[in-house]
Length: 368
Image (cartoon, rainbow, N blue to C red; front, top):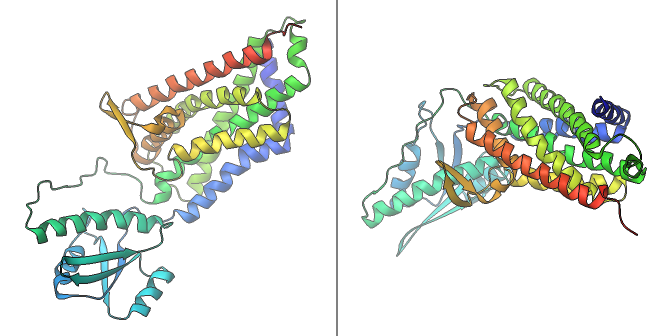
């Protein structure tokens, strides 16, 4: 009963605190809107290429690019040869061309230069496919046999239709990690108000206080998952999965946020520090988890058939992959079992570390 009263008290503080509401609710919703605008590009786009300085030896390379098609028959590249460097440059800067290829013939063979906007998702995806084509062409010119032929076969009939569909689940992870500064602020207030010191004179134990705060944050986590999910749907997200399963993953991620919030609370003195330090910890995990964009693989080892990368030490990384599989690809509990278990185990470790360190630094009565 006392734990529930603590949870109710913390929920009322959150509701009555404009800064907390703006940070935890409005910020992720705003980022959903930014993502919907900035990532609203199809997954299987036909990339327009402007090609300058065409040589006879380069015609075969252009023919190879023009012959590539997706599984549904759409061309991968729309090749537009041009002999006007100014026009090609203008097309690249205006966005009419995803990339500008300059092909020159030298004594050593073909010299291909690719230019584009490194901040463009379309250029990033196109450059990866161009690299594969160039490597294959280099092997053919050198007379080397093709040892490996890569054939892409979709695992799911239905999947993300756009970049927004692919990364919208990351906004749920973003919202959940904002529980870190929120928890730090609430706990820091208890420290400043000497609530923890007075607890030693009352029947309310420290464990009950922390459990009450945790229950309040679990309720916040459920609300955040629903709000971000609904906002994404309203902005054009094509959901393929079950919301209840996304909530389960979200609750697992929120355990780690609660533990990190307790850790942050040990090293701050006021609300501003709680927001600044807590937000820094949260945003670091958001970016390193791949929730905003795909990170290069930094594989350390393989566990039970799953690739484990450097940043898989964060529960948010596994949580994002699980949410992405559930909502964007429509998989079930069995398929995300490994990622969900990894999220839960790591989150419990983070939470346990937060509780232990917090109790050691804040809950024990200091000897004088």
